[in-house]
Amino acid sequence: MGRTVRRTRARPGDPAVKLIPTAVSGAMGVEVDAHADERGLFARTFCAEAFGAHGLATQFVQCNTSHNRLRGTLRGMHYQAAPKEEAKLVRATRGRAFDVAIDLRPASISYLQWAAVELDSERRNAFYIPPGCAHGFLTLTDECELFYMMSESHAPDLARGVRWDDPAFAIDWPFPPLVMSERDAMYEDYKGASS
Ligand SMILES: Cc1cn([C@H]2C[C@H](O)[C@@H](COP(=O)(O)OP(=O)(O)O[C@H]3O[C@H](C)C(=O)[C@H](O)[C@H]3O)O2)c(=O)[nH]c1=O
Image 1 (cartoon, rainbow, N blue to C red):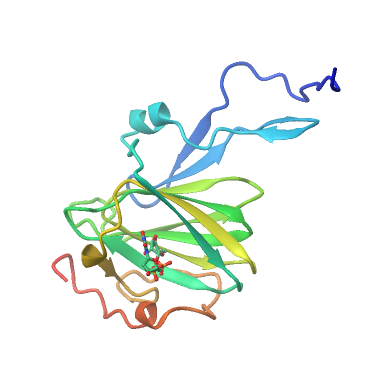
Image 2 (tube, rainbow, N blue to C red):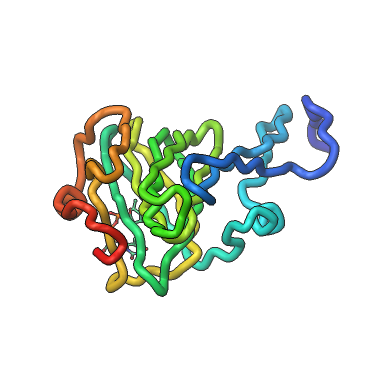
């Protein structure tokens, strides 16, 4: 018989996910409710029932991982055009990243606003980004890895982007990026939803 494990915290009911609104309508921070004991911890990271109750996507069809060797790596700001706009659920599985969503939905109350969540692999938190928003991140540590769940399949012909330092959004990054692709550096200024 193995060692009997005592729960350090008596917790009734299921481990819940906690959804936290941001400045972008429908974009949510996702905090976990960790059940810790002497072995370590257990936490639920996604719940279709909780997401559905808040009008978030509940079906994810592809998952991606993004490994970034250096602190200060910026990827983004990317999105897919209609009809394959995608929701993303993004979490850090190693290190920390400043994760950003930009609202590109003209009918949205938060059109052109941005919101950021610091993703931390130790906190096991996540950022839910709704369809119609651009997404990107700046790594805050070396060897930073992000795991994405996507509500739509990859459609290269519908891939679009806006620039990380576009004055239309004025994102307040924690520090200037040190590494980024040429494509990400060269997006033209945003000219509105038709662009
Ligand atoms: C996005 C994607 C890419 N790819 C292929 C295409 C390229 O051959 C290679 C790298 O793609 P890319 O340079 O577009 O990767 P990132 O610059 O990290 O883009 C991603 O970073 C930002 C922050 C995002 O939110 C998106 O998830 C995604 O656009 O993976 C795929 O095969 N499937 C995919 O879903």
